[in-house]
View 1 (cartoon, helix red, strand yellow):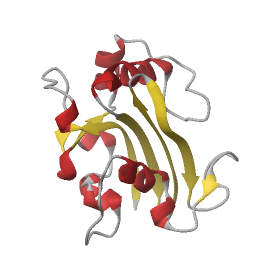
View 2 (tube, rainbow, N blue to C red):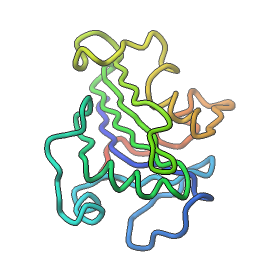
View 3 (cartoon, one colour):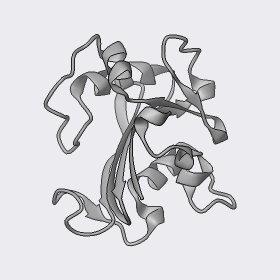
Length: 161
């Protein structure tokens, strides 16, 4: 099964309404902002910001800047999760009060799934998304992992959110 998610996440209680953005409420009090082309154009004023931030495939300086600015109200996290079949990679970072407070963390399911700076996670719970979600306060409870507990498995593609 293939999947590709690129999104910003934050705790709904930390941020006010964002009526101009297509945010999606998630379980555990999180909000997801899917980074579609239209959303990227809206939050960056059309500045694509190529090339990506060091270490990331898709996180650009304008997106990181938007996240940093909005982190003055509470933690804002970036997540990129890409899988094809059973293999894939994840990259994540979080800001609070304008500074990086967590990560970045780059993980892959096996060698060769991503660039050399990605660490192979021996257990799915050690993949970047799950570690990030624990940092954001998600408790997996009876769910398979934090990714499922947060409801991120609901859609496989960024554009479907």
